[in-house]
Image 1: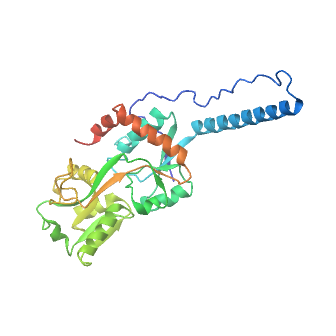
Image 2: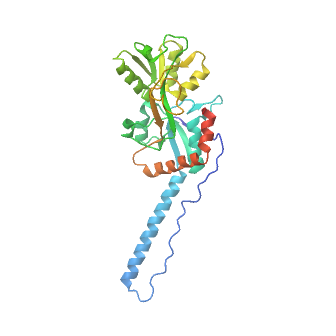
Image 3: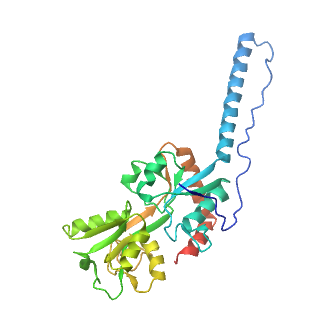
Length: 304
C-alpha cells in the first residue's frame, strides 16, 4: 500500500524529553569492611545484571522513540482523513495524530492507505502499528483488537434526496440503501433490514464516496453513514438532506436533531500485544483534552 509522509498542518511543541536516558544507581564498590568474597561476587553479579537490564530497557526505549508510527487509514473519509486540492492529507484524524504522536509523544508517524473492509486483518498482520480511521469501538472488533479511550462521538444517520419520496423512517421499507462495506453503517442497515422483515435492499461499496455517488445518480434511495461525514457531503451537494425523525439519540444532550440509528464512539485500534504503547497514547489523548488542543482541532471541522 502507498504511504504518506507525515502531514504538519499546525506546529505543536514536542514535550518528550530525554526520557530514554537511564541513571544507574550509585554503587559503593566491590566490598566494604570485611565482606567475604562470595558476598562480594554475588553483589557484583546483581549489580551487573541490574545494569545490563537497565541498558536493555534504555535501548528498547530509544528504538521506540526512533520508530516511525505507521497508521492504517481508509482514505478518503472526509472530514476525518482526505486530500485537499493540493493533494495533502488533511482531516480531523490527521490533526489529532499530529497532536498526539508528534506533539505529545515526540514520534514520527505516517498514514498508510488501506481498505476499511480488511483494515483489522492488516493491523494484525503487522502491516502498520495502529488504526486511526474514524473506527467505531464495538464488541465484535474488540475481540480482535484493543482500543484507546474514545476520542469522538458519532451517530449512524440517513441521507436522502430533498423533495423525494422518503420523508420518514417508515418510508425506507422496500427501498435500496447505500453503505460502505465493513462499517457500522452497514451493520445499522442490516438491523433496519431485519426490522422491516427483509424489505430493505443493501448496496455495499468499497468507499463511502461510491454510496454517495449512487444516491446522486438515483441508484439508491438513501445512504446510511456516520453523521459528520454525511454532513460534509450534504454541505457540498444541494438537494441532499438528513432524514428527520426521533432516534436513539433523541434525548441525548448535543445530539443531532435528525434521525439517529446508533450512538457510537471512535477509538484508535492497537494489536492486543501493544498495551504499553496504548497506555502512552491514552495519556496523550488526555493531555490534549486537558490543554485545549482537542477543542481547537474539533472547532476546525465541526460545529458545537
